[in-house]
Image (tube, rainbow, N blue to C red; front, top):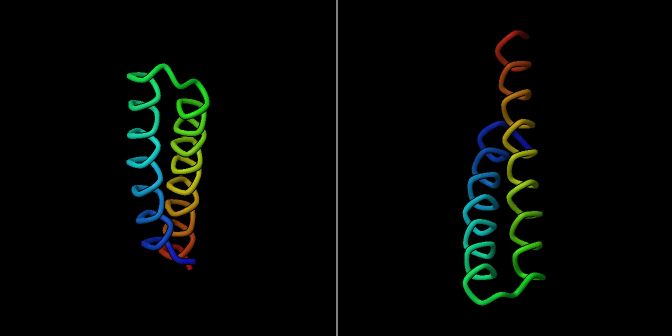
Length: 60
């Protein structure tokens, strides 16, 4: 995957994770909250991956 693909997936995972986390918080569903937090973390990792790929691509 390239930089833009990673960053797009990161944005989607962060958004979906935030929604799950928020709904879990509102409903008191701890499992949904945990899933949301994990998905947001996955999105953050994808964002870093995309940034690294972008930097490597620009330096080559």
